[in-house]
Length: 426
Image (cartoon, rainbow, N blue to C red; front, side, top):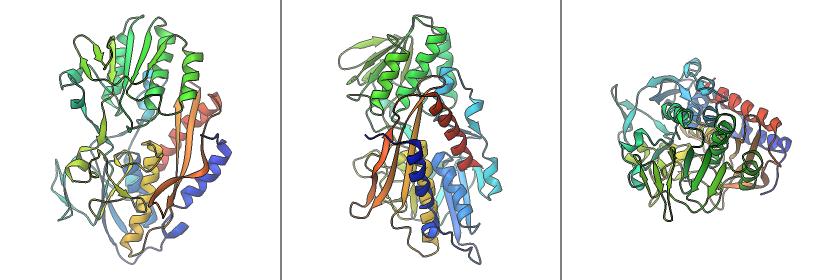
């Protein structure tokens, strides 16, 4: 992959952002009366962004209802810093209150079913709600049953912490309680999974903590993939130069079974004992997408029309973020979900006004990974719709990785988090 300068990326991604606007870079005039209701399920990077931009870009013509089960937004990107001890849960938590300033109706509830024929969403606490169009941004759910022994009882002590929140706190507490000289095992599932570089950043953050507080301890990465799936050279350089002898990487080592009492992970080749087991199960689109029949045939993910993010299974429903059957070389990342939200919002406004969506949308992605408390590496790409292939493809020359880890990028990485949280929530 070629190396892309930050200046070049910002230039390209700035053009990508403007290309998402309704009417091909121009916002439509507000109609004389409201044009319908859009319900958004899920207030993450994709859903919250879609809700906000639907209100903004329609100039209030579209009623937007956001259904979110959690009281606050907790960011999965940057949550590994909590494990490393340099950030707190408060640092990565934001309120949904500002969305109400845009006219978004934020309802704390859980969507339990979608009636695609009657266009209604069933909720756990209040009565069913009708919609004209529906946005489903359910993130991922976890296939614990694919790993022998990873039953509900085992899940009390073997956590994945791949949805930031209570499990993030629990894993940090386990690391703090682990004796110096102990072993932390991180199991990585086969791709695709949410946030490709995330596990390898987590290994760095745990090793950073060990280096400060438990220098005789060890990190073992059991990776179901043949090799590190994102930024391999950069991560391996960081492991060798910053944590030499502390991180052991084993490719082709898929977790087949766990034993919570014995604290072991079994692969096809070995049974490895650790003091803290952090096992990431295989992942699939969130439950609500699966029960609504939105999964593409023979996959764990939802097929979409990349011009509008509309489901290929059911018209009038738009699917965002990690739940999608990704386009070529498109990662399941927070930044990408944010772009999905804007793409969908722009397309929905056009469709609800009887117009066709932008025929060639462009979106962008950046993934920053903290390899220490201050040093960061990144991967970036720009994706444009290809009418011949009917999908988004990487723009030639518009992708790349860092030349090396740096503290300057550390500043960029934390600023990225602040900016994208503000973009989606404020």
